[in-house]
Length: 189
Image (cartoon, rainbow, N blue to C red; front, side, top):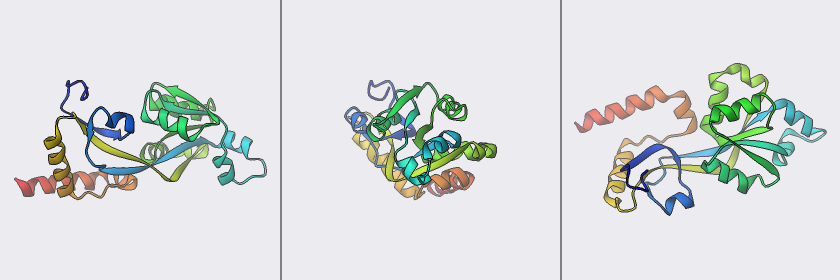
């Protein structure tokens, strides 16, 4: 919608990708999340044999769930060339596919992967989370290509907030983050 001029700004956990950056301007990343996997423990065990879990995960085979038409579908095609990428309409559908052993794993950012276990501790029996070191997904705010000044203002505002966001802060300290933002807004008023 931003690209088509139907919206001035897109604010969400929007991955900054090369293809998207050709169509809109992105602010500098406000958070760098690591890419991660939600893996079905039973299907992992079947592949493991005498190898370590680490070694098995490095050479994972089978079906990998992603949200269709998302940055993670593209990321998966680049990173997991020996797996069958299976797009699902929603993240919940992808998670359910892992739980039901329809796919070996699901692929998304570490916040969403960890949130599966945070939201339902019982899932830890059947699935495991794996965060991929040194494989980052930068998130930014998108504005139209001719909105350089708006981009500048957004970056200035984010710099002034000084949030230092991490996956764990977003997951476990969200109320404090919101309070911090409100305190900064009151200072400016």
